[in-house]
Image (cartoon, rainbow, N blue to C red; front, side):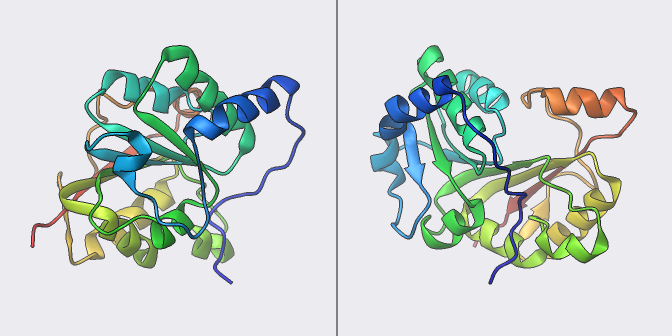
Length: 221
């Protein structure tokens, strides 16, 4: 069995969130199963696609998609409350370039997305799994990096961020080790202006933690 890269949280959903899932799920939600995903059919057009892994409550994803209408955003989130909130934002803001997959992002990547279909993959503040015995569950590891890289078009970027120093160094090592990825910056990347500051990030900064960004590009050929 593959080690999970996320904590499974359970809790009752509000009636409003349940209603949002019922009403908007058929229009914007993507099941994580074994069926291949045709991105052009999913979005109703052919455009560059960004895979957003771990969209949380959806505020940052909605903000990025609204500011970037020329690209489509496929967000993946395991926690149903966050999926419902993002669906609500998509409807409220009239966003046509967002779809939301509910489930394990790595299964989606391995079983449903074709090779070289994405222009970017975002992995912002994944679970750090800080205990050493849990490091195998971290999302950014060499085997999972290889799977993510295969979904990128040549020239496509894999952008990560974390506030966990140990994980940041492990990410840098794993990304540098991939033979088909090249760093966009030497070492850690500057914080991009287009990445919204989430509530989690504001709390991390207020607590005195450093945020590390990493940006790598898939090589041509």
